[in-house]
Amino acid sequence: MVAAVMERVGTVLQAGDFTAVASLLDEAELCSPSATVLEEDWPAALHLLAHVYNGNLPDARLLFRRLPETVKTDSQVEAAWRLLQFAWQGSGEGVWRALSGYPWRGPALALAEALGERLRSRQLDLVAAAYSHIGPARLAALCGCSEEEAVARAAARGWRAAEDGSGVLEVVPPPAVRGELDNQAALEQLSEYMMQLE
Image 1 (cartoon, rainbow, N blue to C red):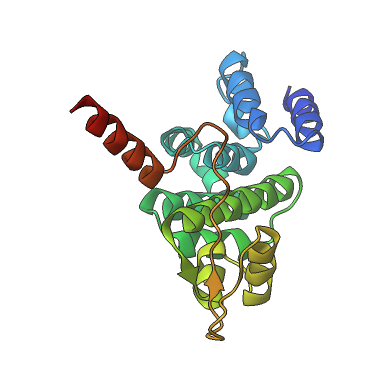
Image 2 (tube, rainbow, N blue to C red):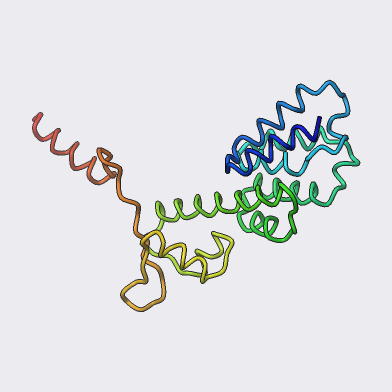
């Protein structure tokens, strides 16, 4: 049964549909006629990583609790558990250490790399929303990469070096979607509308 499940998981991983992995493994676990399905070569680390990838941290914690003690001692499962703990605590630095500090293998490697990319993209989105300027070292720490890679990712988003020569990056927020107003424009429109009512 596990071989058939892993074949389906391999297909969705090759297609880049990383969000589907957790539901495939959940369904296979629940539909298994075996009471010991989690002991029989179950891809526990991949299952944990899939829940972390989807942001389902409570589901990942419950899965870890269901795992037999013999499975919990696997080095890849231990690494996924550490990653989950750091994610649960909101420790970005810990998450990056857990992702890069363990030599993931097999299908878990593909999912760990995809998780890293997803987290970097999310961090860059958060920086774009919160910062007007940021130093390359700070950006690298937030994105779990080298300063050179952080600067390259920033440049790919249209961010540029500040003109004052300080070395910081000027964050260029993404363009507003057509029909969407930023807070200042919305406030100005509301003010004009209220003035017309008076």
